Image (cartoon, rainbow, N blue to C red):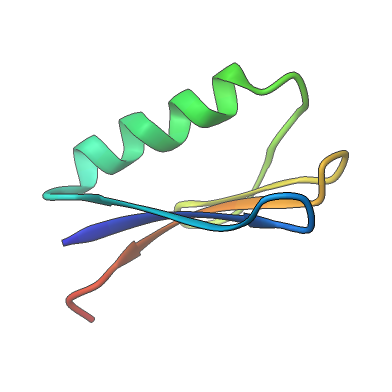
Amino acid sequence: MICVVEYGENIGTLRNLFPDIQQALVFAKQIIALSDEEYTCIGPNQWYCQERKEYVKIEDLAH
């Protein structure tokens, strides 16, 4: 199971589960695309928005 985690000061922590990495990537990219702010890639499958102080990260729950 793959988890997309969104967290930040204003949203707390949100977790969305997906059966595979492809679906998780599509979801994470939708979150970023729909944002009014810019996200910067800070690592493999990790993004940060400085304006909102929010992170989006994909985690493999099997590990």
